[in-house]
Image (cartoon, rainbow, N blue to C red; front, top):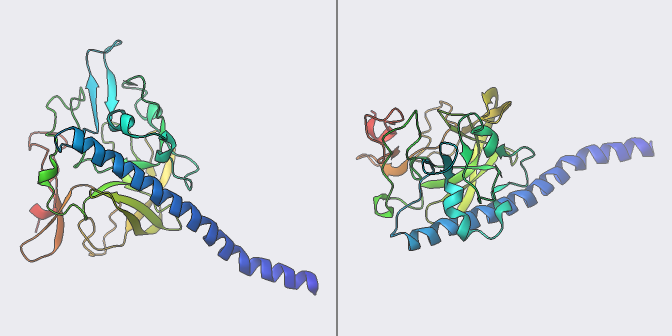
Length: 261
């Protein structure tokens, strides 16, 4: 009987302990996101309030060019490069492997694995042959109308080239952490699904659907698992997003929700 009672108590307490442990990891993730956001704000101060690009090929590098990424640009402003690996992520994205069949990463980055992806409409992409010969426009901070609602980084994985699509990961018991363009970080509520999405470094990850109504999810009931765009509002006051740095002739042009009915 005593053993039975102990087993029952263990079964009852295990979810509580698991939740408490995850709460600690989530708090650390929020702190890391804030540090990452601070590195962007410092970069903006040094580069005339213009956001760095997410990625572009440096053709002058040996072996036909190397890939210069957002983390290369932010490296001088980040002391601990482990802040890009979430403590709740047991398999962070291997950035080297994602691009292994296309380009080598430029040297002296110091990063290889990451648990976070960026808003590719805030940090735009440059010259990426053969898919993108016309670089997208870099984004000035003056283009952000709702800075506290525009996501900069978030818990995610991404697919491989040429799509490089980031998918939200609710790895904190269906909570994802996001950093916003004003520097603050906060939880995003998500819903787990059994749908598998391909990872750019091999294997799959689960699809999570956003639940918080705002610029990136309208509340229409459809599963939205991606975050793109600068936050904006329609004339009727509803949230929406737009992607102003991409010309219509780009193969990666995105018609934001602000432009759709």
